Length: 507
Ligand SMILES: [Cu+2]
Image (cartoon, rainbow, N blue to C red):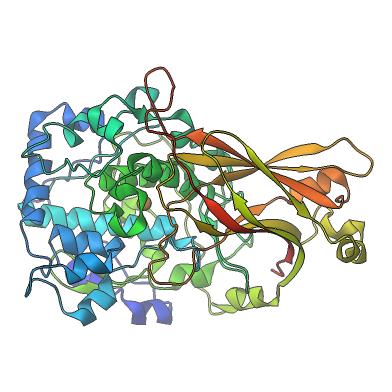
């Protein structure tokens, strides 16, 4: 290991707040064997001993009681856990409540707080989990495989996770049946990362960014492109129904780990894309210096390093089998004395409600459209220049109060159509509506709102007409070899409110 425990503990919150640059690396000792790179699942599985090592390590974690921080239960609960599962633990096997509060239910999928944390937090989570896996199995060079479902030949649930169905710790029954049977596969729509990888901006205050939002004032933060798809869509595909489809059960399914290793792998690929940047705004120093959240390292020490520690895999001695030649990952902006000021400035934003429609029911079988009326007076008062290029004004579509009782077998492409006063109606693709964080808000409030930045509509049309038509077009998450739905089509998604807002972020 290239990071000594003592150095690591020192990177806790006090160092983060002081903005100190803590040396995190010491050269690896020649006596230590190199850890294997994270390999494509197909490559990893081709060597039988790799599969045996992974199964042995997972089984060893599963054999430990929940109160042991190295146990499968404890580690999965760091992401999230159902309270009924905790109260159902055999007596004497749960960790102290204070420890549960400090370490469990930490994943930042809940849109009520900054979801730019998504990639960095999950990278940290993988890091500590992988080191725990090694420690439990006394297998210090073992690494997690990644499921490269971006490859059209790799969209079936990997065989080592579904067979044999007895005595295999990587298999669980709580998955979409056709995936476990090997007859279904992730749909092209579920695994599509092209939109995410085409975005050259990591952070956003609106949308269309790779990594996610940082909350602006009273506006909820929201998901980046990579989180919506393929992250959410793959969760939904494996869990319709099943543990992967819902935040509080997802990390208990062993397939969670190669899925998240792939998300982290895609993050490394994005970090080789030409002209990618963190901003705008140009500096998120404050964000990088805040603690990533509490984890227990493999040795049982509580750690809480700053987010910037996880900005580059090389710092963590994490490597993938194929790395882009000549790629130099981005470095977070340096720690600054003016930290936190940028976040405070977001509070100066303004939000104007232009119109809303309530009570929309979606279908798994075909498109559903809904017209959002627009308050023409409010809009006129703002003038036609409101959404001009370089204006800080954004037109935001908020889809809120999402509920369902059955895990949807589909996600939705969201389109908006605005009949401009002088032009033919323009149809604009707003993004993908996914459901992984809903409806369980993990006790952190109501099911959050998903935001879509549709400023381009206003720009293209000059001004908006008196209504905006929003259309939700379903696509299947799991298909068979012929491209037909391989899960029973199901969606009883209800949307409480679709709201149109003009938001001005003063950066
Ligand atoms: Cu996830």
